[in-house]
Image (cartoon, rainbow, N blue to C red; front, top):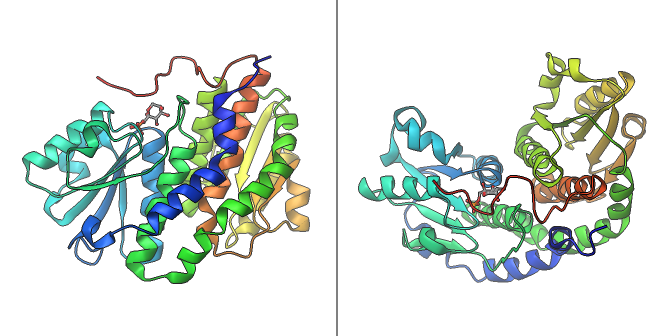
Length: 347
Ligand code: F1P
């Protein structure tokens, strides 16, 4: 049995990490960071790799919903390999390069491509390194993770992008509600941490994580955490898409994790219930539990918040981070030393 798993400690430490970051963000000189790159004038394009790419997708969804201007997300490799397809009009874009380490080769090559074209871009990072010196628009968060897999860095950088979007949109209510998240999650961790640890003792052959809208990138990240932290096979789908073929994998050895939104709970829970009836074990992460949710879920994590739904985005991923680590530990693995992985991917 592994004594102390740094990754699990960092997952439980996220409320405090968010408090420190929010204090910094409230002091942010937004004008100095964004300049004239207003979403009304430039299309914000969020760019990252791995967890940071799913972060980019969640940031783009948040930006689009908060500012009313379409934002996009790309894996750095697409700009690297297929620039004419991924970024056909770079002069009308404002790229935001996201990298915890600031040292990932694919992201650094994209930074060089943009600099060679004389294009302005933002860097969002925790460790800094080369990315932090590649542009004058740098947002570096006070998050130092020892773990290989990203946990608090993912949620903190997404929180920061939601904060920036809400500031640009002048949405004071949203900003105020972000400040409530640390206390909300602190109490939920006490309640649901042990339940997830117990549930993770079961053995699953296939894991499917489902989410729609802004929750789809969160579903992607939950699946990645399960893969990285437990060397288990996990996939992610738009919830209703799962019925168009992939559900053929469902039997009594499968687990389906449903990230249930406020707006579309009825349709999303119908899919989860169907998979349970086909034999799958199910976990539902939902804001307000309903009788339908309780029927569809073997394990139900209820956020119980009256906050704006989009402010709760980062609170959905915490349970997938924990579950992935607990499955790894149950398999006798060490999430601090994930199989085949390094903390940074370089060429
Ligand atoms: C990106 C990344 C992570 C992955 C692993 C290796 O790192 O691919 O997403 O989980 O830690 O690095 P970064 O560019 O955000 O530092």
